[in-house]
Length: 251
Ligand code: NAP
Image 1 (cartoon, rainbow, N blue to C red):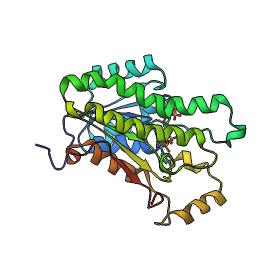
Image 2 (image 1 turned 90 degrees about the horizontal axis):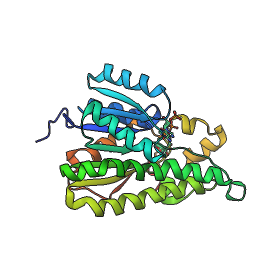
Image 3 (image 1 turned 120 degrees about the horizontal axis):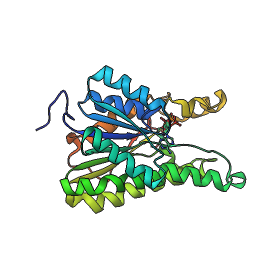
Image 4 (image 1 turned 30 degrees about the horizontal axis):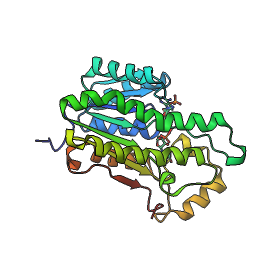
């Protein structure tokens, strides 16, 4: 039976790209809900994030440095997490990058980089946790897609292809592993206040805000709330779902 105030008590959560932005808010929220959390991130600032979260929540939080787009590093990151905290119950595939450009001038490297982190990274991390989850007959994966994976966006063919691919991965894997009591869901954020969106010029930002029914950009905590719901037992009969967190942008 789940504990109401700490519904993720005794669970281990791994959050990729958890050093900043949405990933950090997710890691903090899952720790507040009682989980032990591993932040898997590219650079060392993940160590500060892990320390801050452990201090704020009292939950064991660890940092593992890894590039999740590389198979060996993805496997090693899961092994290091399990050595530090125990078997992974919850995987949040959040790490993502953008390399925006119009298709006619987009180079191959920018296409490959975005697909490698946003889509292949989720495949590699999911594969790295899957045998353990199947063996334990327990697990929950939440993939961070995007409203542009559902609707498309000019100058983001690489990013929207990766995010749409992530929705396909979510639904197919959900079908594959449902019989093993493993759930796979996605969250599709709209525009959320992070360093990724801070780079937007004022004019572009205003155009976007005009299109959002709620009339404002969202905050990372709104995405973290949705992830916490899908990750935990409150969503025990939900799999293959794509939950928009976008102020109505994707309607
Ligand atoms: P962010 O602020 O740029 O943070 C991304 C994090 O991912 C960073 O900590 C980054 O590490 C890490 N990362 C990048 N490549 C990695 C790799 N190969 N291996 C491990 N970690 C890696 O992004 P965000 O805005 O929080 O976005 C988080 C997720 O939400 C992404 O998947 C993004 O596509 C999605 N999303 C964002 C928005 C939005 O409006 N912000 C909307 C929809 C969806 P470094 O700091 O070392 O670079």
